[in-house]
Length: 366
Image 1: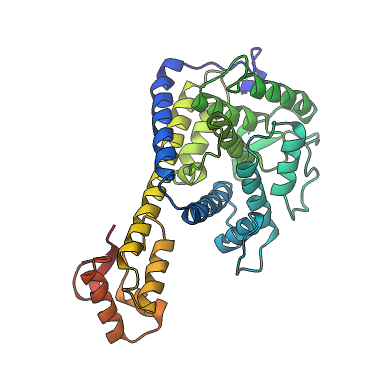
Image 2 (image 1 turned 180 degrees about the horizontal axis):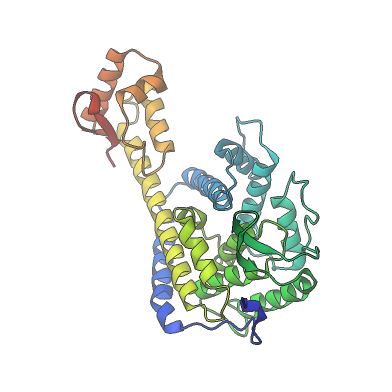
């Protein structure tokens, strides 16, 4: 098996820019839409949305790698990183580490990408880990760095990265490429193209013992943020995680040759979907504000508590809708009171009702 880094022309990737051009145009259009709609969101709501987005990205980028974190713990860490109060006092090291990394990338996207910055990110990400030889520095072990799956006695090798002795020089070339292809560089690339190549290029070098996928994804977001001149605020990891197998397959299919057109087509579609996810979140926050303005001082404390709980679920709301049992569990009230409250919320057009009897479900009327 020959890997892409073993080709004589490595790392001179090839792609058909004509196939990517329409995606680049759509990205610019959606970027303008996102910037425009964000201006209609109140500052406090915007802050909450940013925290939710960073939290979701931190949780989902970890899930892509098979690590499942407590969302409340991650969100608490993100809030503390922004200097905000939080009621959740405990956060495990893994949650603190990924929250610190994601917050740092968001707040400091203008920092020049260097070896030291990458080492610092890795140090954050590996917080609490004691099973690695190299934390906060590139790998140095002699054995091959392989991505494998399957049985221990008959593993399937999906990729073998360059040997550790080459990592420093490979990363030096990567950082040179990063500067040359930036918006102000001599060989500037369109945003989606540069972001997609950055991710694939980095994970193919696989410079760290662990955490390469997560750092590769934040590099993609940093590339887009540098182009925009502001944080990207897109749900990239969340979008990728929905079909993790497709993501892994796309990486596998593009780690042997230097023509990466198929990877860029896949990656561009993921970014565009991620952008629209964020547009939906902004629209949801705007609709939430309008609804609260319309029914201000008209709801009792039970109704306000349930409404706040539904909004925490995001645009998709409760899976399968809000039931009377949900209402009882949230408010700890009587069934008769719950029925009156729900009927009142429907009358005020806060909720819409679907179904009958035990199948009755309620949905936000936005």
